[in-house]
Structure formats: structure tokens, C-alpha cells
Length: 186
Figure 1: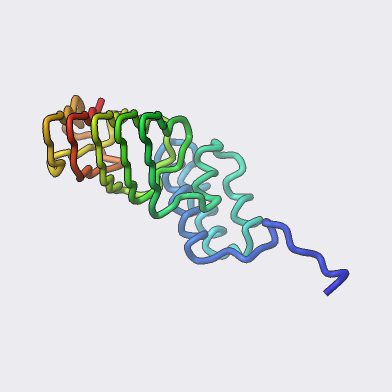
Figure 2: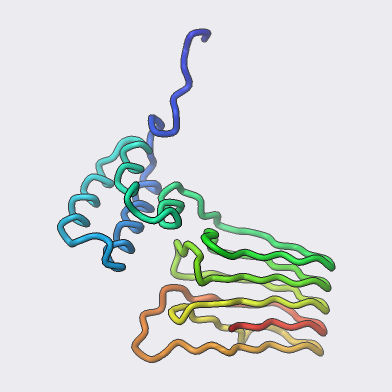
């Protein structure tokens, strides 16, 4: 085995899932006005026939970094956040998973979706809040449902509404339990 070189990321073979993620990224970019319909068609064809990560990466190099993160295959199926009396936050260009478990005993958790990379149309959040707080900050095209949260002596406050006619980019469904703490959506 000596003398053999390990291929770089660009030379590694891409999977069907990798190709599908890039196609979705390209569709979002076109929807944002970053690509014309002709560019979209050409890039989708190239993505569907790409063999390596390098070929896929070349299709997204002129798109913003947050969107390229999606093409890199970074989204996880599930993420867990657990805090005692500390604080945790996700903000900026973080990649939203499909599911989250958030446990907050007496600290605080902030999930800011305004700059997040959204790769799935839905997000399930299972929350367990003691005397702490969980705050979700969402843009106008994110719908949050907190109706299935069991409340002890705390509170759930949803200060957001999606305006009629606004296409919903992400639906967040929050379940779980709250003791004397709070869940706030703003």
C-alpha cells in the first residue's frame, strides 16, 4: 500500500443523495433570483450526471457560503442540545436538521432561524424545559406550531404569524414539556 495516495474530497464519488441536495440547492438559488431558468436547467443536468464531489462543488462555487454548506452534505437528521444552568445558541448560517431534542434545565437556549440554512421543509423539536427558557427567532416565512407542548406552571408564547399568501419555507412543530420555564417564539 505504500506509495498510494488518498484521493481528496473533490475526487471522491458522489451519492444520489449528494446529487439531490445540490439539485435542491440550485432550485432554491433560482427561486431567490440567483440563477436564470437556463442556468438552472444546465446545472441540474450537470448535477444529475456528476460523478464526484468536485463536479458537484463546481456547480455551487458562485452561490453564497450558507447555501454551499447544504451542498456539502452537512445537515444532520437529529441534533441534541442540553444545558443545565448554562446557555446555548444556534445563529448565523447554522444548518437546520430534521429533528432536534432540546433539554434546558435552568439555563437558556436560543435558536435563531433568520440566517439558518434550511434543507428540509419540516423540523420536529422535542423540548424539555425546567425553569429555563427556549427562544425561537424566525423569519416571516417560517411557521411554528407549539400547540402540542404540555405546560406545568410556565408558559408558551408564540408572537409570530405567517401572513396569508406567504409561501412557508419551514414548518416547525414543537412538542414536549415545560415546568416553570418558558418557550417563546418571536
